[in-house]
Amino acid sequence: MLMSDENRSKDENRSKDKNRYPDEQRDAVYRVIAERRDVRRGFLPDPVPADVLARILAAAHRAPSVGLSQPWDFIVLTDRARRERIVGLARRHRDEYAEDLPAARARAFDRLKIESILDTPVNIVVSCDRTRGGRHTLGRRTQPQTADFSCVLAVANLWLAARAEGLGVGWVSFFEERELAAELRLPAHLEVVAYLCVGYVTEFAPEPELAAAGWARRRPVSWAVHAEEFGRRGLPGEEPVDPLAEVIAAIAPPDQQAMAAAKERQDLMTKPRGSLGQLEDISTKLAGLAGSCPPPLPEPACVAVFAADHGVHAQGVTPWPQEVTAQMVANFLAGGAVVNAFAAQAGAEVTVIDVGVAGDLDNVPGLLPRKIARGTGDFTAGPAMTRDQAVAAITTGIEVARDLVAAGNRCLVTGDMGIANTTASAALICAFTGADPVEATGRGTGIDAATYARKIDVVCRGLARHQPDPADPVGVIAAFGGFEHGALAGFILGAAALRVPVILDGVIAGAAALAAVALAPDAIGACFAGHRSAEPGHTVTLSYLGLRPLVDLGLRLGEGTGAVLALPLVQSAARALRDVATFDSAGVAEKS
Ligand SMILES: Cc1cc2nc3c(=O)[nH]c(=O)nc-3n(C[C@H](O)[C@H](O)[C@H](O)COP(=O)(O)O)c2cc1C
Image 1: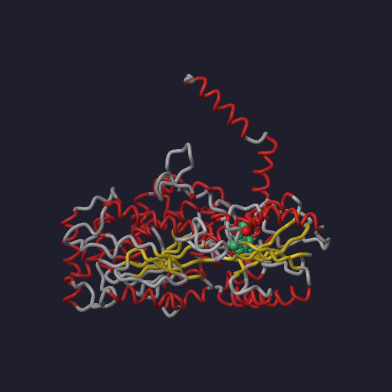
Image 2: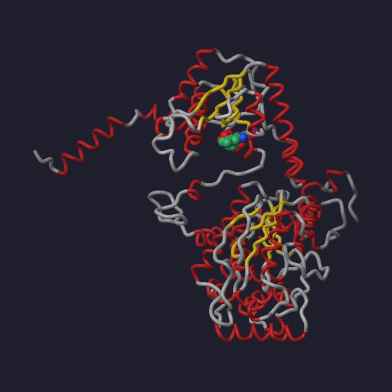
């Protein structure tokens, strides 16, 4: 008999109701997911009863696994002498990790607890056998790593069951895997997946310890969900959000109240009024950006060096071969460039983003591979890039800013690398400010008179060809920009939307800031001009943006070097507002 549509839908609803857990039980599932924590502190010495341990291990053993291969084994450790040896392994790796950290991170890391191997009565090691089940294990043929994924699901089950039992679990990964495997007498075909410290605790923290400590932040779920294809971000039931539109909408003017409070406090601080000069303006601006007085310290800081190549290089605007871009990227990653030296001195991290280097780069730690294309087109012959590529570059910069802030950075610093990028910058500056190419074009890395004349001519020809409309910033970037300019514009917008200060380097960052401010005028509230570059176009840019540089040393290197030099100044401005006593609090008499 055919069912009517109405009856079918009633029937389906009944079966949905039948399958769904009663509200209270469903809530308990979501509750345990929300309240599961990685626990490192507050463990009690009480032993975990055998039946409780058996229950959480059985829960782990119920995990899904590729081809039902159940590739896990669980090694339960209570012996103290063995765990003391294991602590030794973890401490060594902890120290090695700490040595690699920039100063501000190293200080924060020092305060973190990363393992509770001896504070807990029992440790559980989860190992993986990638060969279990033999050759025809269903689903593992093309992806051997699905065995490891299965073991991680066993860990997740154990972690959730433990939370429901009131047991804290802390995952330790500070091991060289084979060293730990040897200590556990693991056969060669087994690998360690997880080392878990398990015990009863005084309490479970409401949020991840790393978030509470300010080490890293949670990313909003809306950043992680994409509709149909990567990049169409948005939650089900909501329109996909375009990151650029979302970020522009999130950028707001500075908080006037926080700024007024900062100004008032500067006048009460134990120093003559106005005696900190420009630093008083910086700290007021930081307060306005953060919406609080005093503002948070802008540390840790990260220099993001965006690297890309330029088609206009073919016009002979620089004596440097294009390959130098890729070679310098390798130098940044090896820690051998000036920006690395300055960043080490200032305690900042350096991250390099390939947004359009012509050559291939090795994937090494510290490099974010985000290539949009292998260099731009020659803007004297056509647009440097398509509009879609310009939007992709901006979006990449937004995401890099978001990720670096989620990773715990409180100050972003711009850097760049791209042979011929001062030519593209000059064109962008003329397009946005209306400056004359003679006024905005400089000698870049140092060029002779003939090359300089050619460079000006190239900028003039580009402007004549594209007739840029400054009211269409994406179009201007597409016409002249490097991918690093687009990405830097997005990076500035991303920082402004998150209300995190961004210290601008020289002329390349300045040109990108012009685009960012054209897209969202209030983004200027997040921008701090690190230095004044020797490039004349930079002076034009700074006065157009109304920014006063902190450092003026005639630098013309790029990379982020000038901005990094200004980092301690911006940090000192914030610290003064936070730490300096007032006349009242210190009992110091004011000038009569
Ligand atoms: C694969 C993995 C390895 C981890 N390794 C460590 C570690 O070595 N030390 C540590 O303190 N926490 C470690 N954690 C815990 C994470 O820092 C923690 O899960 C994260 O900050 C989120 O906090 P929450 O688990 O309380 O939600 C690890 C977590 C996972 C998933």
